[in-house]
Length: 116
Length: 113
Image (cartoon, rainbow over all chains, first blue to last red; front, side, top):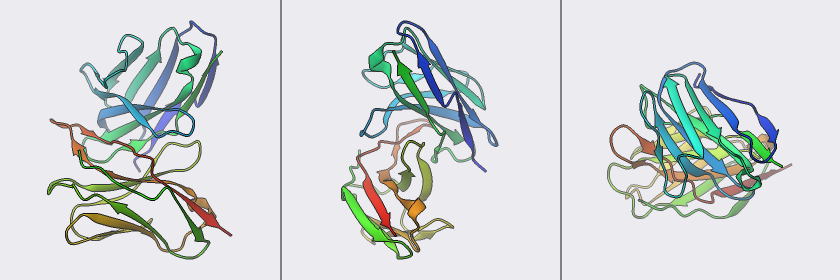
């Protein structure tokens, strides 16, 4: 149980294009989903917290107009990197907290984004 | 926020127990200790969590000292697939129903054949 998927697992795009990453909780409902970013040899950094049906809460320094988050259902959240640039290349990881156990986060496998 | 301190790296022989320490001397009474691990190029994996009592599940055991200022994650029979970065995290309740995890640098555990 408690499986979280991400799609795509890997994406290469040209500078200036937008990329959408999906995060799904497969066997549980998640009121809250989180989006993290991880640069090489660094730890995970929380980007934003997303609650179903409401606007995401972004961490300091994360541009909400660049990283659009939609959490339209209890099993799906999407992160759209708009007008991607090479410095946005990173490993993007989502996590989901079961509605019945909000303290625990279950992570997706991550999406590796390379912007050329 | 309660901070955690972990060794940067540890080695363990395959089949032996791996004991990963974590200091969290500023932990408050209602903060949990969580352990996650991240195998290279994968998303983190939840391992175990606890408040005061020792906990055990199919993956590991968590031993929390009586004063709660430190804890030890025990992998009873480490395998090569347990090689990963292990994160000890004190859970911050960010208000409402959201619980934010703050990842430090963790401990790189290398299990050797």
